[in-house]
Picture 1: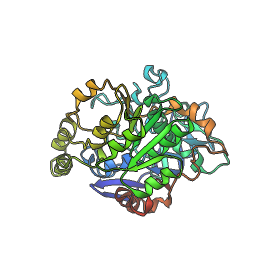
Picture 2: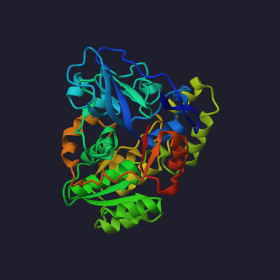
Picture 3: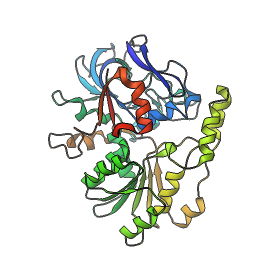
Length: 390
């Protein structure tokens, strides 16, 4: 089959790889019909290369049709249309039963001290082949895939794999109520969708970004969209009675602008042998914390920070005095996809209140994936969300 594989920094290639096969009786093989390009994939494209092996298949936002099931699969049937969550979670262990599928005890990577395995996402998270491919092996076939109805285009449901539950959790963790004000830092796919979800709930949303196209897109949905500049904190305070918003979602993470030293450290890690580079990326402060620092500055005293952007450096310095002094609540973590599916599915109707049907800015064949990665990183051509058709 054809799949997108990693071969080095900014070097991804579509090439022939072996077809996936059933490895356990509870496995299924899914033929991929749509698969997304995520901002988190850019972490693999550049800063997290130390944790990848040439030939790793990328991608963690797939959906498709069940082609084959193992002898131990009783509920999922060949021919069913499914979305595959990015968490590889069993659905039955202690943490899954508590709604913490991103911490699944069955697939935790204890040798690395990390949570549940993820599709297409480095040796830190299981080195499980990903979904930017023609086919995908899916474990826990009776509990992991999300069956969806036939009929509507893939765009209606594919975001259940990551974008929708990640954005939903970001808003849930922000703890905002109707009439509250939420600031979303970063209006890429997750920030954009978090803003839409918050607006749907009657929350006033202020969005901040550097890209005029993304600001215009959010503004068209009813967001008060502000360009990131030196006066943005003062501007937001002026819009919120001088206090700041009730909560801030950081939807940026380690790709944030700022911190030249962190950028140098990320680039330096590429020059080291893998073992040393892994240690540097895991132990050193190599994240660009501008977005997080901005969120701390923006939020009102007694407010909440909700972090959906991915950070990687273990020793990154946080302004704990300011966080303590402002009495902030901080919630974060990988999205627990299955925890939110039942809340989201009723919104995926023909009325389309969240605008999922036209959320993608680009639909491309999988063969175009290498160029799409480059364009997405450069934010060229108004690119916000890409769906590949294998």
